Length: 489
Image 1 (cartoon, rainbow, N blue to C red):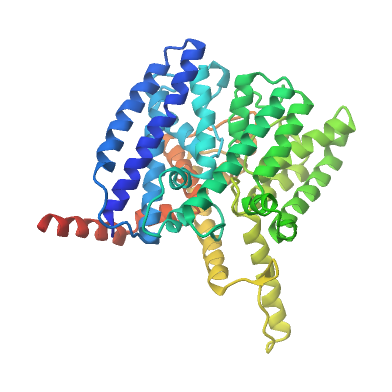
Image 2 (cartoon, rainbow, N blue to C red):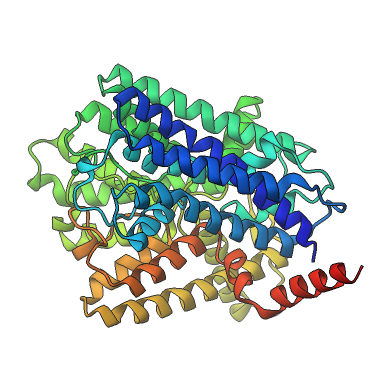
């Protein structure tokens, strides 16, 4: 195992996070809040460690998927540990476990919170809390590849370990240019949403936090009622951008370079919008009698469907009080999630499509045993290796999901709370139902359960296997043996 490249990547991640931590310091200066000193101190310490770790460049830049997964998982854990320090040492979140939970939830774009009064936080903390969504939305290592390209031709292994979806490919021949294109699209859409929010007379600070939270499909709000107190115009702007950020970014690449046919022929994107329309129609029909007008019912149904299918987690109303059929639909779209190659969470629409087509193929083989059929997506056959990986992913997802529900059950809460709490954390959604609904939070769970949720959030954001590799003995045996050999020489 190439341990030197892992060290080098971690060092660069820490240096980059130190730069990000300077942004809340600026917010602190603007609002005259002394809490910014804690962020500055954390940034200095983080920068010092990062410089030391990245000082000596590795002799060998070539690394494989295993190193990519380990580097990615360790980067996200280290990033969360550093990111939670200002919350904890400033006393704004007195418990280290709670501070870590909030930060992991931020970076993984989950949006689940332990806070009972969000508005009691300083502007500095609110900004950092929301900005973690933006950092984690596209991926910290994708950002690293965009600004500090690593040589050696193995960069796609980092992208595969971090990017959401069953497969990752290059938009252009060089991976560093792919990373830059993705972040240009990401940044451009964030700015565009910010402009539309400002036009709707949302305060500048609220607009910044909401835009970065929407871009990362995270869901941390700056008010206790999330977006419920804002105007219908602002809710529609956020709903539309939540849906847009849930689209596979390859579609935007095709549109920018005028490959419109390729963009509109993407089966996953068409299915994604179809699911949104069907779910919205069902919910709209069932909450119409509970709303003041048809427009109000449409606004609430579109907003919540957009929020939960994209795993953003903003709320405009307490959907925990909606009819059973509405809550069932919301839970189902929580499982499905957004498109692969987007900032959204969930199982991903492309996986659901392939699984459905695989089921049809198997049924057809029972009826016509001698026939040979292939699973196609966008008119191209899906490789057997991808079908196998999707099947393994689903099995692993179910095992982790069931194990997590069992472990948090020791807290003695009801099944709906436990089930949706695990569902919302492993799929990076935010709110669930019952005690963890839009009007609730995760503060009443035990320390043990919170660490289970943190594992689920990281596992869900990193597509399960990169995090699980950290628990495989052979990975550490290789690392230790390489270090031992290095010392001999």
